[in-house]
Amino acid sequence: MSDGARAGRAELDSAQLTADVDATHELDLYRRMQLIRRFEERVYLLYLQGEIPGTLHQSQGQEAVAVGVCDVLRRTDWITSTHRPHGHALAKGVDLRAAMAELFGKATGCCGGKGGSMHLGDPSVGMLPAIAIVGGGNTVVTGLGLAFKLTRTDQVAVCFFGEGASNEGAFHEGLNFAAVQHLPIVFACENNLYGASTPFHQVSLVPDVASRAGAYGVRGEIVDGMDVLAVRESAGRAVVEARAGVGPVLLECKTYRFAGHSRGDVKGYRSREEEAEWTARDPIVRLRERLAVTLDERVLDATDAQVEAALDDAIEFARQSPLPRAEDALTGAYATVIGMESTS
Ligand SMILES: Cc1ncc(C[n+]2csc(CCOP(=O)(O)OP(=O)(O)O)c2C)c(N)n1
Image (cartoon, rainbow, N blue to C red; front, side, top):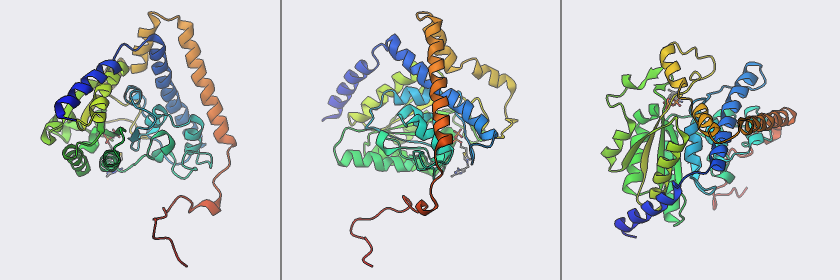
């Protein structure tokens, strides 16, 4: 297909994809964002109460990015994620019970309880177990994209990463390789202004990560990451282009994490005024207000109650699940390479 034809097809599909989202669909986007928000709030309490081991990085405030992007993906498309993966996992369709059990370190978890919070994932729904090395996914995703290209499928891979990762060499290497190979990848940057406690302006003289796309000859786009419909529309365009073979897109979603970087962060590096400014743009409140214009408030309350019940069920499931067995410690740790099986 010529570049012109590809672009033409991309435009056509994009128009279909971004056609008005009806009220039922909007309500579903609301439910999915609310599920992530309440998941994060409840696991934090469970962590403080000592029921969840390890550590946690929560994503309250960033739900519109995970949900808006994953809404335009197919089950057969893949995502990579980071140390902050809960929202990405739930948005891509990782089973709620399996995600919760993984955080509890239980055998019924999506990684058998061996990965925990920072390695959530499930290949059956197109999510590679999350990679906690900052920028780690930015090169790994090129392997997915190259595999899709070589096997001539029309799958797309999305790499979620933070603006902090855009200063890692892996970001540049991954983007350049994807660009020259025209790989079907969307690099979805969640720019929440801080890499742990470091503001982006202290580590980059360019304020927009998307502007770095020009250095690699790919399209960059900035979107309001606090508006799920806007994210969905921009991501829809990017995914259509990637699927049509036009090449990768760098999508920068301007967002904010309402919680600290990880458990125990008192957020001394940012002002309460700044926090209030971003909290006023809460993506869930915004969509709820929009829906309340046409929907009875009771429908929204019932949706919230459904989310709470699903979380009660998942937490109980995780509590009742067994711990992994000691004899399974090495299961899944090594892959068998065909032709290299032991002969002993
Ligand atoms: C290569 C590497 N360096 C440092 C760390 C420690 N670390 C974990 S998260 C983080 C900040 C990442 O910031 P960003 O990429 O913007 O993602 P965010 O936490 O904002 O989601 C750092 C420095 C790491 N995990 N990997």
